[in-house]
Image 1 (cartoon, rainbow, N blue to C red):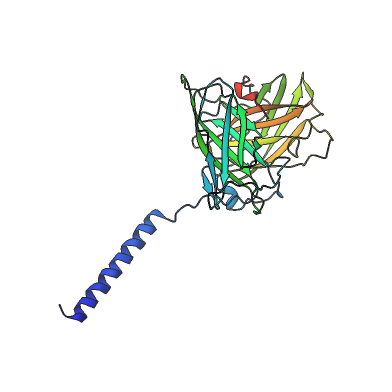
Image 2 (cartoon, one colour):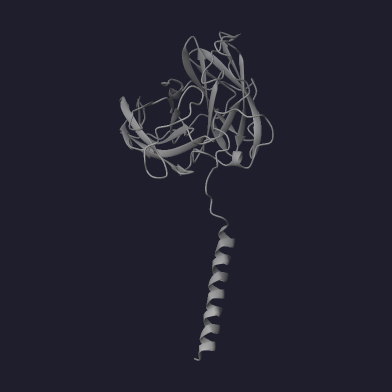
Length: 313
């Protein structure tokens, strides 16, 4: 083969290679780089109501690393039914522990621990040591798989992040399922009713009304900058939804009986809602199972209280 023939053959092979690569890329689509966390997720950094951005529709908490930050869960397994210490480190792009955070709603880092079945839930505020290690006591009653979410804002970043990692709780395992959807639930004598519809692929309003002994509770205390804190998790992969409170708390002023949020569900499916509210200095959690496109009202039968309604803060 003469030199011109060799060049022609090389050019044809190169073109064929590029064509194959393009075909594969077109078939599988762009690589998902994950969420951009536009706005702090799950109740942090309220924003004006309106049509959600594309970033709002991307689930948070599914990645262990994002935007140069990684969640290093130093404790990967804990025994069931025993108070233990959970330790973690947030690392920067160079692998160094992150030691500078912005305070978001009274805390530098919010830690959520939820069982894969969404029947156990904890909202914790760990303590950070000088070397950047966060630690907190935790007691998880049931064996199985759990997801740990670190919700924080780096000091040099303008956006909040929610990173997630898996935790194993050891012991005899018994499978469980979250309760069926219901519009009311009871925790420690407080009846909480949910009104609203969770919409797939868009923003919707959810309103919770708190009553005790049939009377509206009007002394809801400020908690994390609002009169309630809501975390929403998608059943299956435990995607962490963007939730924003409608009303910010005013110093020591109480409110109630209603507390409202805007929630953005990225897809159709079943979700578990965990509402933290504070009365008489005690934080309680009311849990709901909801399905997208299903409205709720006060006429549904209340679900029984579940273990996850009592947890540390």
